[in-house]
Length: 221
Image 1 (cartoon, rainbow, N blue to C red):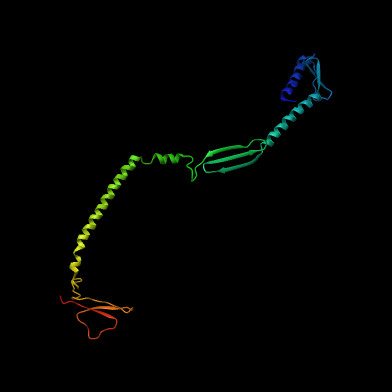
Image 2: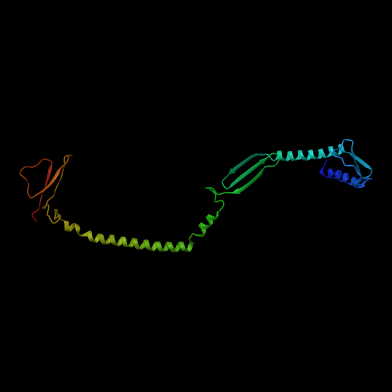
């Protein structure tokens, strides 16, 4: 029995109270009803209490079963989350219902995805192209000045050291070291048999020559 049918039965019972041959005050009050007790229904009909009870029970049972079915069908079966290169998909499956699927864009290493508020703030605070170009021009000018200064100093250094060889060496003679003349004219050959060698600067050759020692005689110039 549907709710509409049940309501029509109840309305008929209530209507019988109004159409009864006696008024409410003339009726005898009771606390219980037996299966044989009847209610007058409009149109000269009657319905037994047991029949009305069973109708109401059946309707309530049907409604309860429908509720139980709805609850059983609402059981959550599974929830899955699948993230791909540019989207993430959430799938919810319930017994008795079609799966619910929701896909949203995401950001990954290979896809830009969604821009957050923090990302927007970063972009808003970035330099414009004009500002970047101006800064690049200024940096280029500063670097150019620095490079030009280094080149100038290198050229000046070449000029400074250009005549140092003539001041130190004349022919085969090393003129002075710390104001001290070391060698006279002539070639100086230094050889070693593979072992270590001592070098001594002397005014003249000593009478006793030490093995493995190289003697450099000071120039008189």
